[in-house]
Length: 434
Image (cartoon, rainbow, N blue to C red; front, side):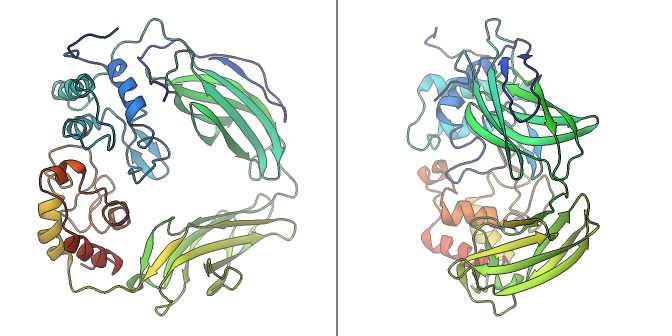
């Protein structure tokens, strides 16, 4: 895997003015026996890049939680909420590599473990700022970003290739701006990928493409080029859907299912949206369908299904909008409907499962800060969700992936017994009753 940086930073150098559907961009973009007592991000980043960020990056893989990522030093705020960076997770990282539970298959060398432990200790000197990023590396070379563009039915597809002469891991994002309007195109990372600039609802004009790249020393902003946006006319409609995600479950207690839809159209004031609940085994026969009329730019909650919706594993929610000239369709991930029941309450689960197996890390008195989950409470806050708020995440980690409690707990006799895991699963599938 490519190594993350050792900080420094030359200003991002970009050249090439890109207009229209043909876009091309070129952006200029020794070891001792003892670990340093005061390591910086320059020492830490290569260790994380080689051993951690394959799972703890974006997207999170193999059951890793999406609430933090280790390919970035700083915290970032996304549409889903705050995502913690490596700096905020320093003590957690040090604990997990010291007890050997992370990485799960190939433990780190003692030198690397000591580097991470010493870096985490520096938090005591700056508890709010976290361990130091450190000075820029004077020989650091800027990343190289290459873009291409092609018109597709939904807008302009931007292909990118992001490389670093130092073989540093590079992460960042790409934006398109016109005046005060900023369109977030999405994240970029070392290697190749594609992003879509959806032009349906955008005003016409010459948009500046801006990259924000970080190869370990901190984010650097640079102009990546320009692209001319000519929206289709008549404008096609767009519909968005907030519904259960891939792998989630819906308890019978939560039926009928409430989903949120929003729709927009640049030249139509009133829109009609068809929303349906479908079983993937028979997708052409919806179990329930609602037709909703709403103003452009508005959102609305829609109820789907009923209390007797059959238990199953392959449900989706599908939303479709049409203005007569064009149609737009989106769908949720697959989720299950559960008719599980339980006599356990939150207090019973908290006393008999969360307290002995989870609260050492996931409570208001957690020993490792910033884990952003408080299982001592039924409901919590946006910064520290409670057990009910995090029920889907708990189900994914503790029941499906069985990666919680972590390897450190299992190695020290703190493994969750199968009978208790089954109880927790039944409680969650029953809707996590209070």
